[in-house]
Length: 161
Image 1 (cartoon, rainbow, N blue to C red):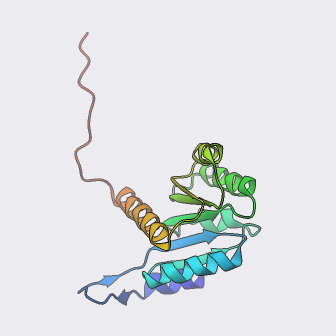
Image 2: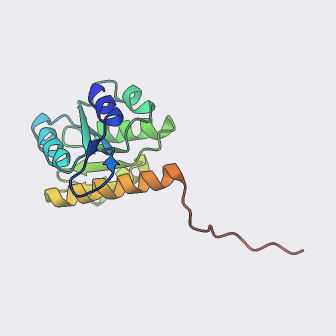
């Protein structure tokens, strides 16, 4: 948690940009420490602030403070535990976008993931660029949700009786 606080209150200057940029805060929940550390290294190169957590820890209390823009749930250890965790987030009112990763997921796993409340799903072998792209897209979506969408909203025509 101290890493997130550090980044949030002391933004770094991004090369090529004339303004300070606060890194997107990403939480990776994974039982596979090796894979999680690889993803963290790749995301940090792209200036994401990453926190790693094992699924056995009290993840819901960590997420409840709404201190992350994206949650990455790795289902490699136990897909049921990951699905249960996602359901807990949604039941607690957590609106942070969730990206689920499954090493060998099939069609049924995909459906279960979306029923549990995930926002994005990746399975099998995927390139680092795809993971970075998905996390970036989810963080942009989260930013738009947080500040409100300025586009005109469609409204239903008045009902005449």
